[in-house]
Image 1 (cartoon, rainbow, N blue to C red):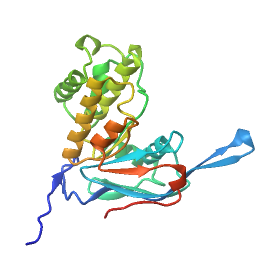
Image 2 (image 1 turned 180 degrees about the vertical axis):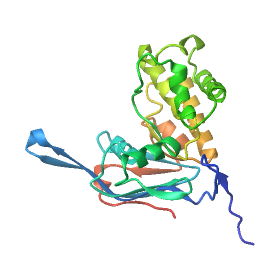
Image 3 (image 1 turned 90 degrees about the vertical axis):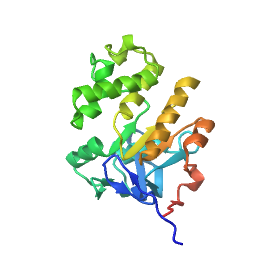
Image 4 (image 1 turned 90 degrees about the horizontal axis):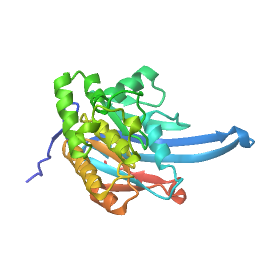
Length: 256
């Protein structure tokens, strides 16, 4: 008897097989030229190849300076790669991000590609509640729907209600990180990039983040993350991509 394949419903409301990649990277390279040091060229990423499927979390591992955060920033479009391809499933079609126009990149970010950076960057004097709600409002949610979801996330992440009307720029590092996480999980991203989301968190809030990651996987998201905590890595990872320098020239994590 042939095995039956399960389907999952992703954030773009389309049913896809769990075997379907939502992001594919081919021959990706990134260099930095140090103009103040006689034009020395640093080859940070060389020939990366991998794909991540719906409901899967790929964890980037390797020593500090191996290029893990650089890879996430390149996938998100903050850095322009030297060569290669980055394709994401956007509104039912493959979209190439390398060479895309700024407008195309912003459209993919608005609907498909989420990112938790290590630092919260927000407009000053905007309340924490509004900061968290913004991704949902940008997608057309009603303010009532967005507020309900934001309040739920802030409560789960143990942000006291008295802080919700205040600007997060006045908060501690751990509180800002939790605001950042709440904002990232405000809407169901098809592809989500996570740059050390459990850093600066106590054990209780760390577990909340791991639960949110698991819920995103169950909802059909493809996640790529950095977790320096070994227990966190083991809890969320379906696969790991070793970013150690010795492996930078030959990485194949394709399981298509």
